[in-house]
Image 1: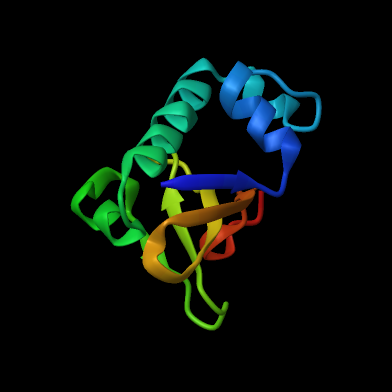
Image 2: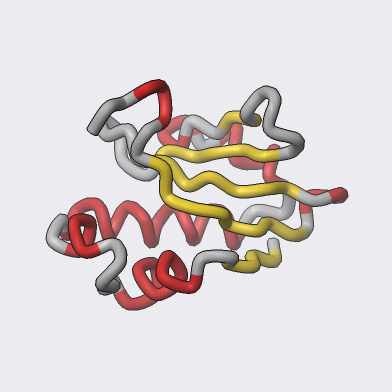
Length: 106
């Protein structure tokens, strides 16, 4: 699947494991590795709906957001990759890394 990043800082974090905007995440090696794994599942999927079969990602379409979906990065943490799906499921635009999912007040 083609992935286009709207947040270049997030792209840098995923590809290199380092970024000044996401400094709190770069200190957590487990999180950075899990983020890269989640990204690889996104990249290798033919359609976003294929992510449903990978249970630990907890893929969900977000209601009331006009085509936005999310996947979990690490089990036991609230951080999720939020992205927008386009027709045919062939292009995903990654919007951001969300740590307020489910009303978390970090």
